[in-house]
Amino acid sequence: MNNGQKSAGNGNRGNYPHALSKIEIGPVSLRNRVVFPAWQLNYANTDGTVSDKLMKFYTDLAKGGCGLIFTGAAVVTADGIPFDRVMHVDTDDHIPGLAKLFTSIKEQGAAAGIQIVHYGRQSSSAVSGDVLRAPSAIPCPVMSQYDPEYKVREMTMEDIDEIREAFIAAALRAAKAGADIVEVHACHGYLLNEFLSPYSNKRTDAYGGSVENRARLIVEILEGIGERLKNYNSTTVGVRVSGDEFVDGGLKPGDFKEIVPMFEKAGMQMLNVSAGVYESMERIVPPKKLGPAPHIDVAAEIKQFTTVPVCAVGSIISPGLQVAESIVAEGKADLCALGRAQMADPEMVKKSAEGREPEIRQCIHDNACTFWTTGDPEVYCSVNPDYKKGK
Image (cartoon, rainbow, N blue to C red; front, side, top):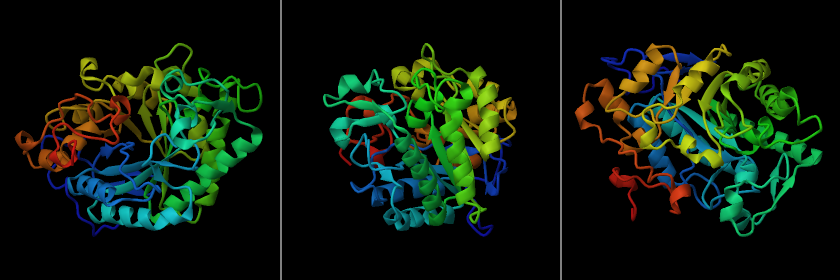
C-alpha cells in the first residue's frame, strides 16, 4: 500500500490499542486489525461487474476507517450462480471494474481484498439453469428443498481440473486489478469446503477419503496461485474455513491441526476462521441469542496450529470495538471481521478511534440483512438509511 494514503481510523488508538494497531500480513500492511468480511450483497450488475452501489458501499467502509475490506464473494465460473447479481471474476472483462473499486478503497487508506468462490451444491439450478457440481452427488439438504429444479452431480476429473484452473485464473485477474489480498473461500459449505469435509465428500479417488486427499484440491489451488502470482509479490493469499461445521460428521477444530499446515506449506499467508454450513445457518450468521463472538474459541483453537495471522468472525458486536479489542488483546485472534456492525454504521471504526462511541449507529442484530434467509432480493439494513428496503 502507498504510505501516502489516508489513515482514517488509525490516528488515535485510545481505548483500543490492540484492535487499532497495525499489522503486516505477508507484504501487505494494515492500518488496524478490523476487517470487513466478504459478504454476498447482491449489489453487483447482472453481468457480475462492479455497480455504482457496490462502489459506494465499499468506499464508504474504507472512509470509515476499516483496515481490510474483502469484496465479494466473487465467482470463479459462470455456472452455479445462486443469485442474479453476484460479483464475477471469471473473465478479463471484470478486471477494469475491479481495478476501479480497489483503487477507490486504497485511496481511503484501507487494504483491498477479494474473496473468490464456487458455490458447489449450495447453489440454485433454478437461477443458473445448471446441474450443480459437487465432490459427491449428495444434494444440499437446504437448497434441494427450496429449489424446485435442483440437480447435482459428482464432479469428474475434468471438472476438477477446470475448477482448479478457474480459481487460479481468478486470483491472477484480482492481482492484475490491484487486490492486496486474495482469499480462497473454503467454508460455509461451498464447493471447496465440500471437498474438505467428510460430511459432503464421499469420493474414493485421490480427492476423497483421507484428510490429505480431501485437502488436495485446495492445496493445488494455493500452489497454483503462488506460481501464477510470482510476478505479483505484493499480493497476499488467504483462506477462509469453517472451523466447526456444527453438523454430525462434519469438520471440527481439531481436524485443522493436520489441515492448516498443508495450506500454509502451499502458500497460505492468512487464515480466516468462520463456522457453519447451510444446515447450520445460524452459525454462519449467528443470531443474537448466541451472544457476542460465539465462535471465538473455535478460532483460538485453530490459531494454535498455524504461524500466519488469524482472523475471527461472527457477531463481534459491541457499542464500539470492545469485543474486538479483548479478542486481539487476549491473543485469541490477530484480526476481527465485523460485518453487520459495519453495515449498520460504516464509520464505526473511525468513531471508535475518536472516542465517539455514543454516535455509532448500533446494529440491532435482527439479521434482516441476510437476504438469502428472508427472501429479499439483496442485502438490507434495519438501521442504516442508505440500505433500507425501498432505497
